[in-house]
Image (cartoon, rainbow, N blue to C red):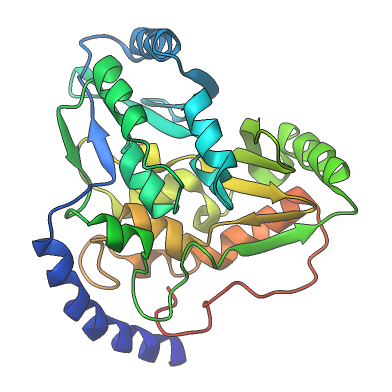
Length: 313
């Protein structure tokens, strides 16, 4: 009953927030590149080659389902930006989704400028966006009503919900090297259905960002299930994947689902219709639990930011 009352409070708050977002020109979370009249396998080779030729390094690659491939890439400029920003490791990579659909392969990717502002990066990634538009195409941006830079840099889905500075504590370790070795080993082994997609050391810092394939049997903690539950568009917003874990010094964390999923799906209603965050009300705690178990750290505090405030889903 308490959670339901929180939801009732959030909905009117959102009704006052959303019109301002809708009217303001700005940025959208995803970009649709030039589609390819090729099989998924051939499109995969073409996109990886284009990224490499364009100065990007492909650091991750996996297929969450048979008609989808996720390619994760970084570049020297993105790593420099990540190193210059507190907790900037979350912006060290961008995902490109390849989706075989209706006889062709759609190419979609995270909007680099949207990501940079949502993750409060030191640079806005405008050069990265320009390069990706050249090599992958930029037919249109999509995924949400446009948000301004100011709205993204202070993004909060609704009152009481987590922000970028309210991460989930995934445990601590005796030291950075011990943590890096242990987490890497456990992810490579696919502990508890959580597999390693990529691992990037941030230059000059004791920080490592891990891209993880959330594929446990528990659907509430399954990355593919998250997107499929709330996205019925074509092409889908699979470039949201993979989920990320940050090792900072000797502590592991992740962005709370109530922030990171809402950042990329900001127009999704809390309740109602075929797609709403209410369908994922068990997912934040389920993901926290599965990641803590998979990483094997020691959790000192169970604090997860604002999860006890209004608007928990």
